[in-house]
Length: 143
Image 1 (tube, rainbow, N blue to C red):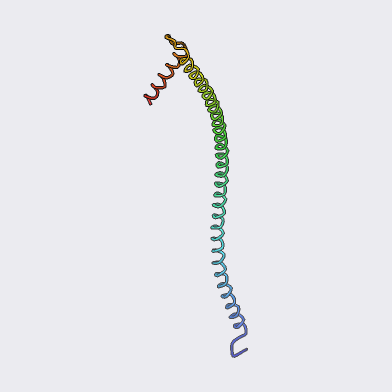
Image 2 (image 1 turned 135 degrees about the vertical axis):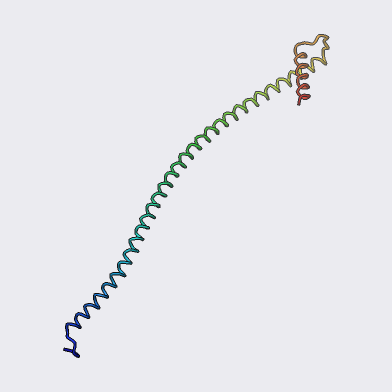
């Protein structure tokens, strides 16, 4: 016996203290585990949100690609149409230039023939020139 206290009391006191420390540590550990589980649930929700956002982004990218392809096809069609119109316009300008050259030659020949031989009755060329002049004046007045 030490100091009048039985050895069993000391052993049981030491066991009681160790048990109290163990219970205290278990309480702390339990609180940490609860936080870890709560963080795990939050993390799981964040991962689910991230997967959802990734799926939405993938769908948006697919739609953007489809839209870009449609726009490219439409643009190419419009460019081809514009090219055809440009060629057609160039052909019309060319034909107009040829027509203007013919009219200029006809006018020149008609002027020379009037200067050489005055005829009292207008011939077909002069009639055509007069009609052309009248139309040009009418267009000039209308404009």
